[in-house]
Amino acid sequence: MSSPEDQFKISLNQNLWGLVVGLAAMGAAEHYNLRTLFWFSVVVSVIMVLSLGATTLAYTIKYWKNKQG
Image (cartoon, rainbow, N blue to C red):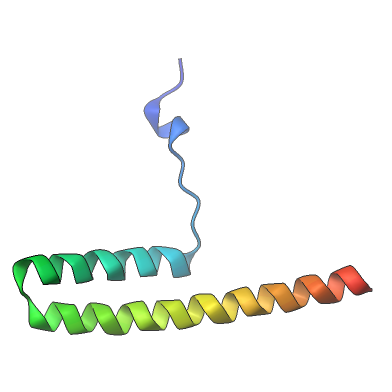
């Protein structure tokens, strides 16, 4: 019998983990009305979204170049 950990392996890159943490912190800040945490999590989330976009663009360009040649 396999363990429950084997059935729920989550494979995310660092950008997505950072975004998940930023959005979770934003939710906690909204729930508990913590202004400093809210703005910190907004900044972290924006940075992670920009990083995720740049990484996705770079991987897409590399894929197109390898597919053509």
